[in-house]
Length: 192
Image 1 (cartoon, rainbow, N blue to C red):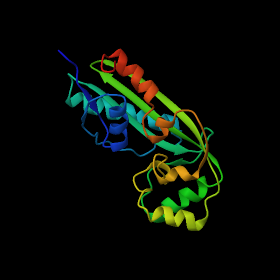
Image 2: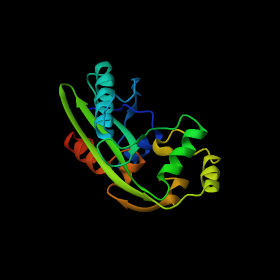
Image 3: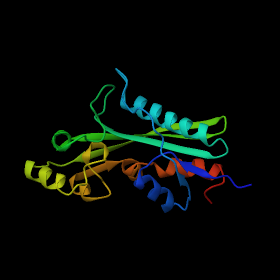
Image 4: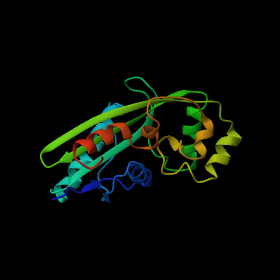
């Protein structure tokens, strides 16, 4: 009997990344509260949310492998600012202003649930932005790309023009660390 994989995420970017490495899956988004807890670090937040998403969907589909991920942009340090998805234009422009001419981290928590077994990890990539003028921030906002993206930018889209340096996994910044995901899915017999 072949094992099926469920991606517990509505992110088209994660689905495209899995497809890129030859993995077919079914999408079943997890409906959970993604609010950070008081004093929760960025890495603690993404790990908790990834595990919660995977377990929530695995409860509904106990015969499937369930892969979940959650990504945030943040400044380094135990309690650096966490940038989720902007709620509106003002918040997106503020995020881009804070990221301008600065180094930030992108952390993705990832969890794979297979019955009673669970694997989990957090992958962090450092990204450096050059200066972004007010006019550039506004023009970028007007493309529509910042909405629905952690940190109000998409490295795989027009947001790439702000990046002056990257240390770590590019696919992690897009939303799923493929090296780690591929290793897990190879072990499960889904990637060859």
